[in-house]
Image (cartoon, rainbow, N blue to C red):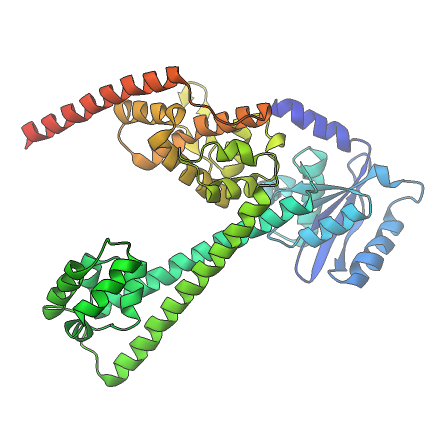
Length: 445
């Protein structure tokens, strides 16, 4: 199928002028190949301005491409470097031209092929991009509906905020480890209960003077009765023998300001993420894939993950096989084989990092509840070394296969009795396997 697709792409660009463009912040570099694959004229630049797009680009192309060549016989190949290509691709598509997207990896690996030289210049890259497009190493530029574009933007923003949230939680934890390291043994510092306490108390001396009766009721409400008087007594006990840095007045003021800064950032980001997810779910409900994915609710796929998955895949109908989604997420396996040698298969990790995180979270939860996924997880746990992350990623394949099949049929997930019976039998074997491992450890000890 990959070879057939490559041949179709080569046939598509055959007999057409190809303009390869290496995008940049200030100015883009372009090179033109004629219908025979020979460079016409010299590579040229045009600025990333209105003048550059609407005047300079076409003035240079009019000097290189014959006037009798129509738009159908001209294609633009643009390298997808960062976000520099997006405005240009959108502009060219709006003008009615076909836009082909060339991966920077293709450019990188083709660079030494041209003249056995690893040197990198913009004119050289522009020519390489055009040559790669002529050889069929490209993807077609796709336009999506405003609904899909809005969801995708919200998904990107959510994942970036989540990254910033993790950073600020680590900064908060680092500060606590210096001032009151024993606090972490009682409460995780990034929980709502801990953040509430940090707004009033910071140093071990502060916790020694804590009003237990007053604060116990507050943290009981915040933690939904998971913490109370016992937690505060433990904190007070740990504060008596803390090994934290003893701060002077000026230092306490500085650390207090830093602490409040991290807490404010955490609360602000969490509020923004909550708003984004609410809007993302509202938009996802308007897609034809929502009913399929939400049918897994209660079996490991939450509304949040379902909405993020739809946003990142954009159009699930374009994936006729679940392996395409795996490849898009970077979960596909690459293999090294030569002669009689067959190397180990490893993940490529070249793909959409946001989608790979979403799929991992979905699989991690569905391995607990969904028979089609859990059965594979249990078999891997029994038959291979118990490497949790590898087993979770391996179990993403049956989950994606199930989702693609249900999307094609436009029907929700239904629990099958035969699958449940098989899972019950496998659960018994797994429990016996765990007991045997425990007994072996005891004997070895």
